Image (tube, rainbow, N blue to C red; front, side):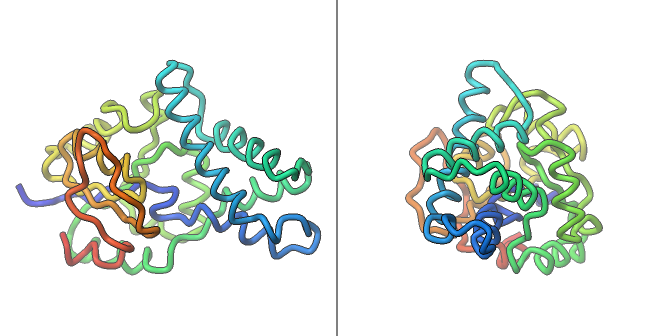
Amino acid sequence: MPITTCVFDAYGTLFDVNAAAAEAAKDPAYPGLAAVWPALASDWRRKQLEYTWLRAVADRHCDFWQVTQDGLDWALEAQGLEDPALRARLLALYRHLPTYPEVPAMLASLKARGLATAILSNGSPDMLGAAVASAGIAKQLDAVLSVESVGIFKPHARVYDLVGTHFGCAADQVLFVSANGWDAAGAAGYGFRTIWVNRAGAPLDRLYAQPHHTLPDLAPVPELV
């Protein structure tokens, strides 16, 4: 069936999750961050994702803002930067992450082609609302769907169910796009057509399904559809 609905992961896919640490590192108030911000950003993201998986397996759900804070606390301690002011600054920046440069034009192109567009994210509704508003992309999205409505993180099938429930479409009418290889694989196993946005050139995850396409960024998505 033809694709009718294009759905995007948010953090790391539309929004640059490294931008908070990069921006804070420019501030002379935090001199210890300048040399280590790439490692801190990497640890923060890794722990944030690990905590979602562990909470899902243990059936101990909390919202994504909590795991975002928990991941940051681990990353700050790992770098010897247990500074309350820096922590507050990083969290404030995370709520207003910029999109990658190609995102606005890519979404506009999809809308011009008559496709429905949406976010499907682990993010909590208030986090996603703040990010979408700050980035100015609300008018280019038909829906912002959060796992909080089902109480478990991706890649659980109940999360991917949200798309069909909201749009009334079949799984094979959905193109799902994620910068997380495991998320693209999980969505492919669910039945979506999928794109993995592999900005870092990482190896393919060895999982039960594989993404249908791999791209270096989001710019080619409209032509691929």
